[in-house]
Image 1: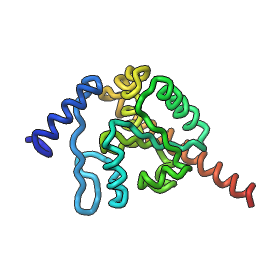
Image 2: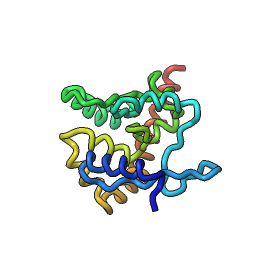
Image 3: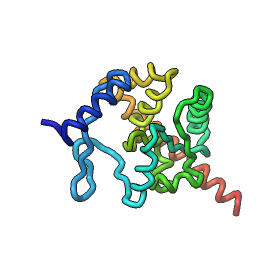
Image 4: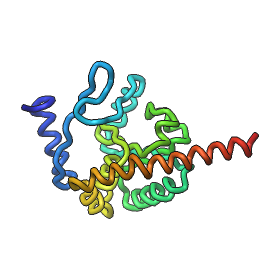
Length: 183
């Protein structure tokens, strides 16, 4: 049984070969109520579809991150500098800037985790890091290791239930501190 026809399956196989032989991801299925079916994904609001279609006309990978977060900015700005130096087609958007509106993600949701858009697929968390690492030659080894069965699940659990919530709480404290200081 194939999902989405033979052309989508062959496209996923070609994509998996390009990404170093990782198995293709299962298709995204949403019920009528918008709840994820086969795997969790971020549904795109209707108003951002035109923007996403325009973004996917190029092979560029786009990253949405919190540049106000010291942890996030340290890591992602390192990747951005590497991508610029190597001429990689990766765009880094700060969620605190005007670029976030085009993503169709509100500030609070965007501040909770890393988001990556590639080939029309929006990923977040560890899957987003995997997409990003696999796009950068220096970090492909990391993407392949973290993408291994078992390791990926453990990394996702640690990110989803420990690191991302902790970093998000720091973000909220920084915002509250700024609000108190400014007025």
